[in-house]
Length: 73
Image (tube, rainbow, N blue to C red; front, side, top):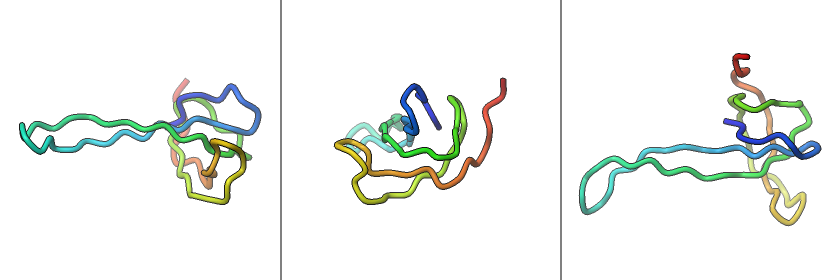
């Protein structure tokens, strides 16, 4: 899901996942942010698919290939 679109042709994509804690056996949420190149103009809240690509800048190594679901306004 896109969490920020303030940069030109770049979005921050947050990936959430649920994992089981090894010791306590409780499910906990983990999240990670990826900076991705965006030629499609996605907005905050859109669900997008990203793929790894060559390094485009110091922190950008992902690219948006499709918008799966647009955010409701």
